[in-house]
Length: 307
Length: 284
Image: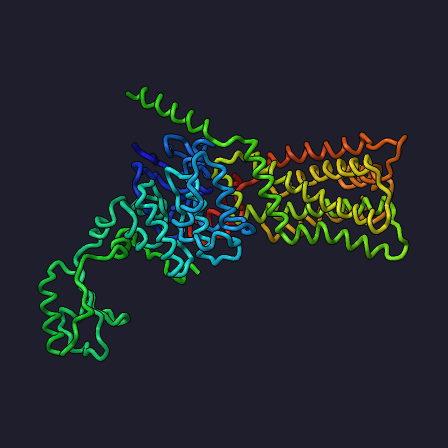
């Protein structure tokens, strides 16, 4: 059974097509990551699925209902974590979760949700005195309290420092283990790689890839040899076959080649002749980021872009 | 097979719907929730309760008594600061920060959220007005009988409802938090000033007529009448309550039309499509 079914979704804002003929389905229990740069249409898609926004054309079904017409019963079956933290901060974490829990027919116990998001020790603390990362985890907890069949997570870790992000990921990992249907939008390929059964890549309002993280990675092209040059490595002595692959700015040799053996032999021979340590060398499939770039042709936002 | 699936789905839906919490219980929980939030909002307590009390104390340091109209005016000041300014600013802030959207995404009936929020505001606003009257009784020996106290309370509650409903409506045309204070004060201060919240002001005939149809003067008149009640006099004037009732009903209708759950200006980080989206996004 499909938890989500969209067919030919289009959403226009004046002359701008934010979504252009987006179709996909998500079977119940699947963890799907939606990737794409800023303005690609991820949030527009998720807001249509949550019922906040109507598509200009096309059809959408979430848990068998049109989200715009979903009543109380339908809303009790979904969990929503919006793009920015949205909480009344004057209450304690426990009080806030209890208040939201009362709205649902079969809520999760508050203690269980607190444990899932690693906030048990902060249960009695006022929400507005928590750090940004902790508040984001309270946000995720509010999305979970109703025991949703499907959870929408709209960039839950954007803007968080690495430690806070790691803690939110801890909570998401527990969700994934529970078999809940999750639709996660994210800028972080690492996030998608770690949790998702499937990756949908959106670029300029269109679905440009819909596959597993492993398969997406294979679309990045050839096997890659990456060798960060040790300090003092004499790049002038590189043989022409390797010199063409030198990234002077990053001080590394990156070879994307169909003939891995020949490139490896040349690199080892040169390193041996120059008495260079090869322990930093990596040989493997392209990263998810490289695959993503080859598909969308767009760079994902960097850490500094998120402020 | 398809029919069987449909039947199963509809049975499942009925079972789930039956288990949803009753709206009346949710409403009570919302009143309690928003009441607690307001009491933990310093602006509500300081501006709504403390300011009228301080004005009352500093404006009558020697005389030892206070006129009922002056006392009623300051009680209405506390009431309206809470029901208009605090409620309005808090509502805009909740919308802009995404809190309203968060509630909208839950199975809480939307009317429960608003009725709960308005009732909680009226409770705190009435409390603010009542504290001023109590200071008048305690410090300035204003005589008040049981029926007069009850009448004052009724006038404050009805006035609070009208003002809170009007504030809910006007938030629909306030674009963001930064604009909320200028817009709310611009629409508030002239009204309370010509209505005599700070005492009688020289008014032309047309200003008197206008003030009598605005929602401040009828509350002041109703509270004054209640405070001055004695056997043989009437406790309420129908006109005051008709004017306030019209404001209440009109504001609720306006709120139904104007109210927005989502911000007009997204505060999230944006670029490309999102920026264009903000410029052209229609009100939902």
